[in-house]
Length: 168
Image (cartoon, rainbow, N blue to C red; front, side, top):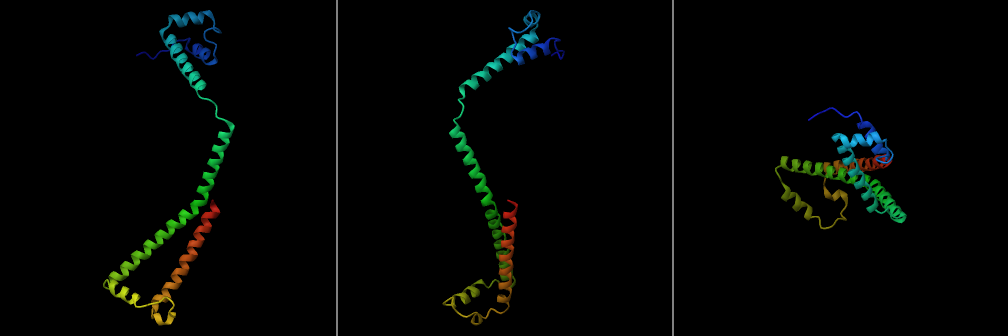
């Protein structure tokens, strides 16, 4: 393998690139290409690639303007849909995270108190209707923790959706 290049290689490359080969070249350059193996290979490969590109360009018909317009409208709608769905998906992820934390906390609380899920469920089923006054539920501290926790959750969720929609 030799790494030396021909002194005419730049001239041949320029002639091929500009489209002057072979008619627009000097006769001495054409004679050199016939004698030099490197330059003749360069001409052969370059012309093969140019012919392949020209054939490819002829085979592909230009798209109609209405098709291009339709694709642009479809792309615009997809971008708008993604922009609208981004805050909703973030809020859903946040809600899933909060529900997971609440569920894990509930299970930890139940585990700490001896896993009395069955007694809790039986107490809940004794409430025949949902219309009972809050005082008769006898929830005590649980209700005092539940209401502020839900309020904080609602405020944080609203703030998160607002912040995400402002950045979009």
